[in-house]
Image (cartoon, rainbow, N blue to C red; front, side):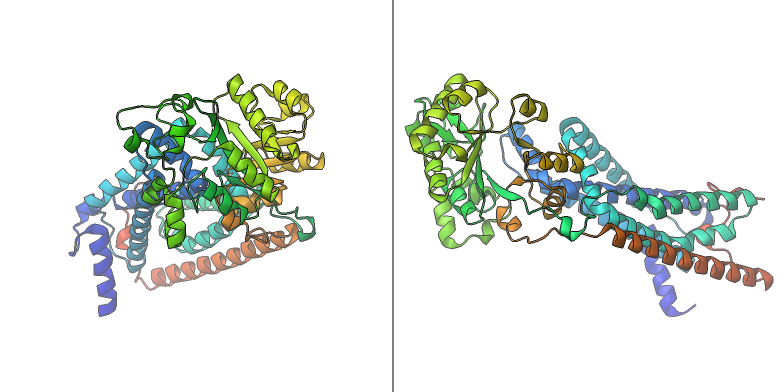
Length: 534
C-alpha cells in the first residue's frame, strides 16, 4: 500500500467515521444498512432540491403567505433554498466518501453525528413536503409540469449515474455468497435499468418540436409593472416595463374613501403595511380596508422606500444611483395616472378589483371612460358585475378565468395560472382563436415551455429578462431526440457489459490463485441485511 493510498483511506475514514484509527469489528455490524440509508437520504435530498428549484418561480407566494401571518417581510423561500442546498451538498459529500471507502476497501463505520444530521435532513424534507401539501397544494402541478422541460435531460443523467454505479453493483453481485442473493441483485438492477433506459417512451414535452412548427413568442404583460426593477404598482414600475416592450400592464385596483380608484395589491387587514410607510405616518392607527383612507391621505404615503430596504428580488444592486433616488420618492398612483401612461404608449391594461363591490365597478368604469383611452385597450378581468360592464362599456375586452364561463358568454380571452392548462389544451384553444394568457411566469425554463406550448402571452415579474429571449432555452426534433437516447442507452449497456466482464475476470483470477481478499466494507456481516450466508 502506498503512502498516497494510506492517506486517502485515513481521510475517507476520518470524514465518514470521525475516527482516524481502524474501527473494531463490532462497530461495523450495521455498516451496510447505514450505507443504504445515506444513499436513500441523498436521493431524497436531491429530489427535494429539485422541487425547491422548480417552484422558485412562485417564491413570492411563500413570502407573501409568511407576511400575512408575521406582518414582517422576509425572503423565507431563499432561507429554505439555502438550508436545502447545504443539506443536499452534505449528503452528496457523505455518499461520495462512502463510495471512496468501498473502492479503497476501507471499513464503513458511520459516525453518530452524521446519523443525526441525516435524520434532521429527512425531518426537514418531510416538513417541507407536508407544508406544500397543506398550504401550497397548487405547486405540485408545477413540479409535474417541470418534468416536461427537464425529463429528457434527467433521463440522460440517470443513465450516466447508473453506468457509474454499475461497478459497485457488479462487485456486490460477484461477492454474493448464495445463488438467491445473486438473483435478487440481478433482478433489481435489471428492473431499474429497464425503467431508466425505456422511460423516454413515456416522455412528452412540447419542446420536442420541429423548429418550423414553433409558435410565435408569447407577448409579455408587466405584473404590477416591472417589480424586479422598481417598487410594484408605482408609476416608476410601469414606466420601466414600457422599456421591456410589454403589451399590457397588469395591476390591482381599490377604491379610496372618497371613491378614487388607486393601485394596490394587498387588501384587507394591514393592507398598507408591506409596501408603504403607513406605520410611520399613522403609528397609532390600523387600516383594514381601502375605504378607511381618503385619496389625499393615501397620496401622502411613501410607496418606494420599502423596496430599497427589503430588496424582495435581490435586484436593487442593478439600479443606478438616480434610479434608487427615483424609487425612494414613489407614491401610490391612481388608476387615472396608469390609464394616461397606457394611452400614451398604446398599451393595454388588465386588472383585478380587490373589493368586488358594485361601487368599485361603477367608479372604475367611469374613470376609464373619463380618461379617453381606447376601449379596446381595456382587458376587463373582474367577474363581479360583468353584465353591468358589458352594458356600459361594450368596447372593453372581456377576459375570463375559466373556460366554461368564457364559452357560455361567447368570449375568446382567458387568463389562468400557468399550470391550469395542458400543452394540448393550449394548442387546441389557440387553434380556435382563443387568446390564452398565463400568470405569473418568471423563470426562463417555464417561459420556454409555455412558448413551445403556444401561449399567446404571459404575465411576468421579469419582463427585462424574458424580453431578450429570441428562442426557447431548448427545442429538439422528436426524431433527433430518439436517436440521442437510443445511442446513449446502447453505449451505457456496452460499458456496463465491459465492467461486468472485467469484474468477473478479476474475481475468477483472485479465486483461482487463492488470493481473494474480501472488501472489509462489504464482508459477510456487513452484507447480512441483503445477502444470506451459505
